[in-house]
Length: 261
Image (cartoon, rainbow, N blue to C red; front, side, top):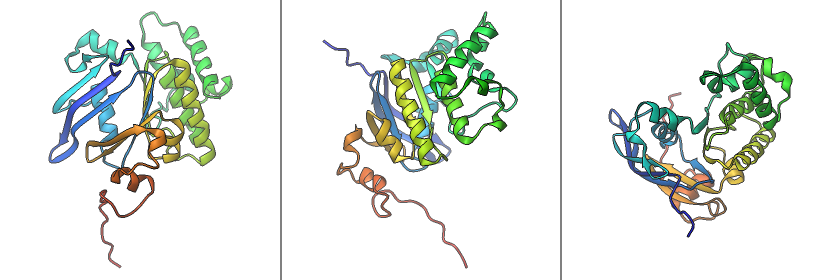
């Protein structure tokens, strides 16, 4: 009988900041080996959800399980071991300005006990190649990279160490359509080759359609729909229908400040 246990299981997850409810009893399962994309309007709780899973934010209520194990109980070395399973690409790349590309990508590997710089650099060069960048990029600094190159370096850093779980937050934000498709193809290729489980946060519906196995929509801290990527464009779910078709009218109400002229 095949193992049906979710890789990541979220139950009743709630998180508030003062009077603002960022996550409101959210339930969501992530299957092993899938690319699950989170969509939803700004402030829906997508990035907060990732931070709660990682332990960067502590949920007020609810549980987070990885391979059936409650991660909220992990402490010390167990928590460090838990974090080592993740590769993360931040929304704004999050590269260190004062380090060359190869040290940015190999940063986590260089912190490991007994790490040898020359060996880490060789691993980094392989990851640069995996995201379509040449070896000479290794010694450049962040300011010398284009936006698309920074995105690819951020993904290469997420892939370093071949993690079993990838979190990619807005990997194509601010990129032109051609570069977005380059990044999309790189994500699919590398996730499949690693056999990783990936959660991708994106506002780019082309990206969501292209890379996802399943798509989950968040609204006001709840998961209001989850389904196969092929179903998103045709679902009758009112939230997804409005968001996917960019309609002004629907259950999603966006606050608009009145302007005085």
